[in-house]
Image (cartoon, rainbow, N blue to C red):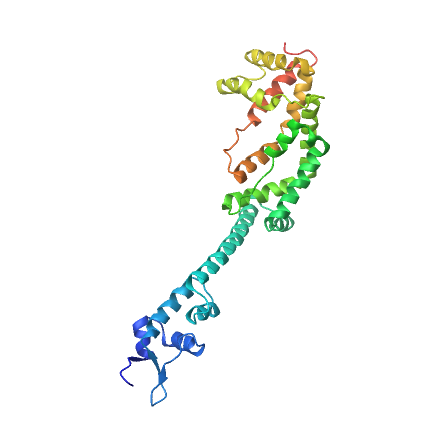
Amino acid sequence: MDGKTLYSIGELARRTGLTVTAIRFYSDRGIVPAAERSPAGYRLYGADAVARLDLVRTLRELGLDLPTVGRVLAGELTLPEAAAAQAEALTARIGTLRLRRAVLTAVARRGSTPEEMDLMHKLAKLSEDERRALIADFLDAVFGDLATAPAIAGLVRTLTPELPAHPEPEQIESWVELAELTENPDFRAALRRMAEQLAADAGGSGFVRRDPVATVRDQVRPALAAGVDPASPGADGVVAEITARYAHDGGPRRLLARLETANDPRRERYLELLAVINGWPAPERVTPALDWSIRALRLAVGPTGRS
């Protein structure tokens, strides 16, 4: 054998830790060919077969298919090129698995029907362009011709979700829920009413004062923290402050209508989901403040007001 070191398939198995069956499999496919055969017809392998098999095992454990492994060993594809291609494939696979996980998590949490699960699955699989088109349709339905006003245009931007290129699982799950919410006709109509009220406040100036929801939240926060009952005399000062601030905008009845329109749990949920998707801080919940204010204002604007 002219001084060359040759190994039988059994010796090669002991040196590499692979089974004889696996080595024969790779040999039959030309991945690790035999150097020659013994007089009895048994395969014999050169010393380089050990290194080749170690590389084959590593590449296979990293998920590369046999044709790609063969191209690397044949010098048709460099190892960095193969690694880059596999990393890209894994990234796509991870994205797919995250989408599936998001849908399954949402279904399990919400007790969805088969129809809802099918819708969520379709929403999760949308491309970036399709996601943008879905959101554009939603925002157009809500704001439409109102979106040209400067203040409304700014609001549109703050309500636009931007799912990152490599989202976290919770961002995907939030996107699925938000996308489903945007398809709800009642929710679209509720937001449209809010947009019309904002536009009416702006009038012809195009300038919208601070959102009454945020203003009222800040004004009633101390009363909430102190446990003041909105039906008690202790609420009178807060109610007077709220109504005085909006006396020029139609008085407490108009403010009450504004707050009742805004007090939609879907609106708050949309903002929570939006913050997760866009990586923003979680918004402060406004429902407790709105509930308190609405109850207090209803008493204030009733037939006789507070006794």
